[in-house]
Length: 451
Image (cartoon, rainbow, N blue to C red):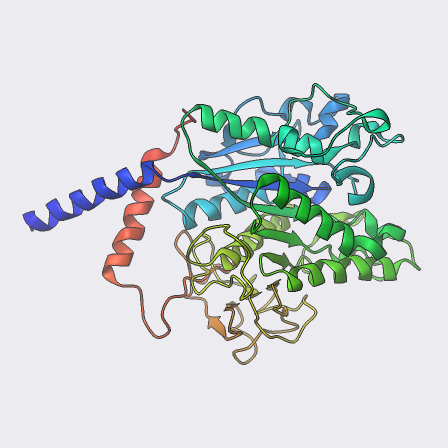
């Protein structure tokens, strides 16, 4: 017994030393108002209301005009928590929680910059001039990247807010000044509702491709994983949505473009939002608090499926980047289970169906999202299950016991992440011990601030 204790202690010391050398995984979250989020803090579980072990840097360009998010703009890293006068949140809360569970050997950092009512044509494109009608929504690409932006801004494209503290370049500089190695691990993009109301919808695919290419080029990460939130069918007038009758084809075009961009790029995935309840009957643009929590979980599932076991946003692979180990994101397969199709997975197409009672569908590369009850493996993954499809297209059904580290099976909601290993094998005692040790390390580091 004494030898065993000594061995465990030695392993713990070795892993702690290894963790200290691991880079910070930094995620960039951007988009319009459903990335800003309308979640209310009272709806969050107590343990998610502030997560000091996850570093958060937040900016909403609404602050340019002294709006309600002015006081929420970060000057340094802080805990991951709701921001602004109303202490609202979007998908970052549960996404960050899932990443911390999936990568316990890394510190997780999130930079979020989002602004409601913005589009790729006028506001988010690289090198754009100021929007003459809505100045505070101008030049958001530069506001996000700062000195990392390769565009030149002169003449009628001169920067409207040249002295603005930008997000990503300053965030990286602060980490590096404190001696941290940093890996820019992924981009989450929730946007497209704006274009769905006008003619820009029909070119959305091309503008989105250009935006992703620009981000990857300027960050120097050609294989940067990108997860898109597909705009909701709550927008349709037949569903009580805010977009006028006769514009249904515009909504269709944006939704189809988001799926197409994901299916053609093995390092891009999309997640479904069609089962999300609207914030209010008179506000079907936005989701309710529970939906923002589920959105973060679905982003996490899709991201983990993209990066697979390596966890690395390395160069793009022609064979896709589906995960045989797509679980880990800290959630449970429950009544809000999900379907994930990655790599070259084959499915019934379209997305928007539910695995179990009200699941999500996630598609990447040439994978086709499930329609209805599931992809591959024979229909629904039970009433509360999720299914994860790897590059070969073989979906693995997860019943309510298929919980990942950080979550419990059979819950009534959750991201539906599943720890998938070698078919037919359960995790070994050694793996379980490492998971327990990782949880202990997370508790030990909880409360630390950068530097």
